[in-house]
Amino acid sequence: MKFSAKSMARLVATANATNVDFGSMITLTYPVIYPRSGKVIKAAMNNFTQMMRDQNYGAYLWFLEFQARGAPHFHILSTQNAISPAMRIRVVETWVSRMVKEDWFFVACVNRAAEQDMCEWKLMSNIIAKSYWFTLRPETWELMRSKEGARRYATKYAAKEFQKTPPKGFEGVGRFWGCSKNVTLGEGIYKEMDEDKLRGFLRSTDHATADWEILPKFLFGVEQEMSTEVAEV
Image (cartoon, rainbow, N blue to C red; front, top):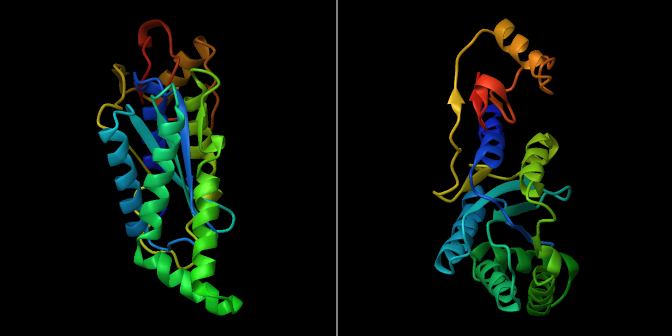
């Protein structure tokens, strides 16, 4: 399954036109070993977002990408704008404890230990310790530098197509992004018009998309009679 153009457009629109303001971003990374199943990683993400709801960490929007080494990698935009040490520890405990209890983790550790001719329990303890401290880093949960920072990051992410390609052997990637129920498109004007009329309007307002070869489905920062956050072509 690929990250479709429709899904990408919806992500960009949601991130840019929602009335929710994201104040921070959580990054969740797997260690040297990682699962090759979309079902497994989505279950881990659901477990994590359930913790966020239980702890009242606010609204969120998550998206998935694949690192150069092939490991799945999650970013979660959150409305939380203050981060305590206890909250950071809770993130570590939720993410790492889920991982180490799963069958794929044990099997992967056993296989890797056999390849490296070392004690599987020593290898497992090393991976768990490194994952714990890596997830505890300040970079795992960072405050956004500006109000628009999260929106720009989500838009930039959507354009990085090479990080949406699952590695060989990865099964059933499923959805590439999701959000809490309260992260919705803000009020906007939805209009249908032919391309010439739309381009004429955009040029009259000096809009950045006016001369794009393919016009986007969602437009932001449109003024005058389409003065809203969203206008659908």
